[in-house]
Image 1 (cartoon, rainbow, N blue to C red):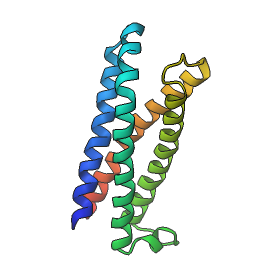
Image 2: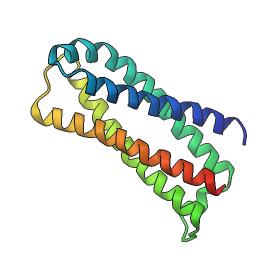
Image 3: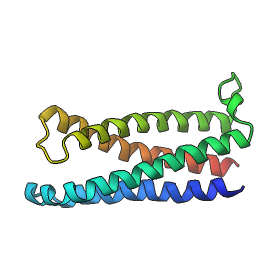
Image 4: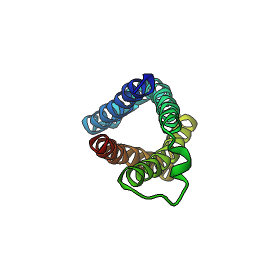
Length: 148
């Protein structure tokens, strides 16, 4: 399998584990003062850590797809269990990437400011979308692993 799968798995653990941690933290910190004390401190650290994990995931994912000769097949009319599951996984990853850009942009713009209601909606919505879609990506990763 090579180095890419190992690095991909470590980055996936960091990415999904971080999302679980932030979800639990968000649910646990009900008091607005607690949130205002914690998020500005750990948010940027978490954001940079998660950005690094996402870059590693995208790079190693591309490397594995390319090294296994699947890049051209993904953009063809070929259909089978592996290719279909991989296509769905990659489409969800694309949505997660967009949600991540939205969330990080709003978070960086409002780090030491009060978010407007629309910024809160998009920030929390994209964050929850990332969290839930991570679980779907994890499912498709397991589906692919079972097939292979």
